[in-house]
Image 1 (spheres, rainbow, N blue to C red):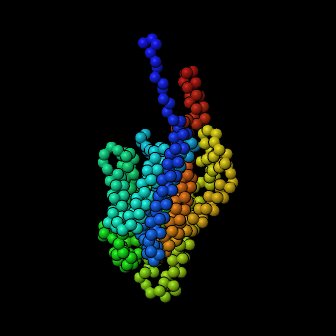
Image 2 (cartoon, one colour):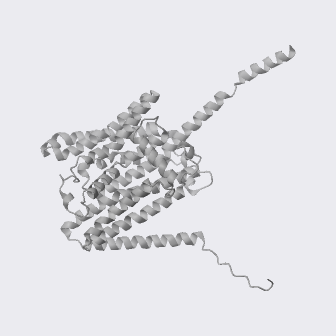
Image 3 (cartoon, helix red, strand yellow):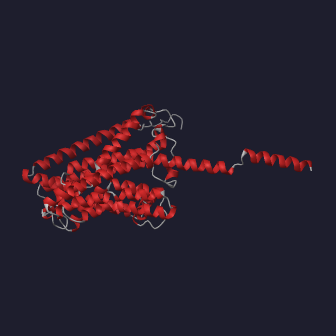
Length: 426
């Protein structure tokens, strides 16, 4: 209608403003969790404080490390999306696969939920609400398990199904081993300490030892001397070992046996460490500890050699950072010699720390083990770049070879042309 007033359109906040607002809220949340957690810990008596922290850390550190690995995997996918590496084809993913943004969104929720539950545990326990405190990690684990196994079309059902199916193929290598199978199994070897802590946590929850002193006894069913600890630590390596044997059965390539030997070298490291609690101290010092150290050196150096010689292609070590569009990251990383030396040096150093994180007799140094496990995930994070790129280069080389073999050679074309001319004259 003429003369009618037009309502003003309220503009939406800019994406930059929303992003800054979210960052402020995240920092405020982090400060609150740290403040409440610190005050709760300080309420405990000095003699119980360390044991209290150790127990709380046990329940939540594996989930924090899973969140870290999820963040890093999102960065991997972002770099692949910027470069020429077609990771969708390498992993044979569906069109509905998770992008790096969706991976980061999942990591964000995990990063928020886990510390919040840990803060609630610390606060309730320090204020005498022991039963409510004990329910916090149980509730968190139950929720995450329900989300992972939920058959309903929510929370990325197709991606969860892909992940669970790949896990089943890792545990039961009854079919031909594909790249996603052994790729995820390799990542699981870096998370063996995470799986061990998850097993310890679930054991205490099932036996109702959360927020109690029953588990302080080292020889109890959920204590630090349990035989389940080395069994869970070695499981990812055994899965990868049997995958290599299955690959040898299918391909008859001797390199599969050499790869299986690499994973078998982790077994003595794990079980010799566990023997410390089942032999006399003088036997451990004089005989078993030297064997443990020697097996750790062999495992570290063999694994480092395999990374450099087999899993990576050193001739293209930095091509992954050549992005499709001009980028600061390309200028910083592509073709730089320091990247080459950093990858070699850091990979060697962090491979050598495997001995520490695989050794159950050192797990009481929980903050050190946590830091080493986080560094191992960073090593695996940079390993992913070159391993996936190497696989993509193999796939493209194979495709180019097949295309060239299907095309007629120059001699064949000349022969065909001369035959056609002779036939026309006839």
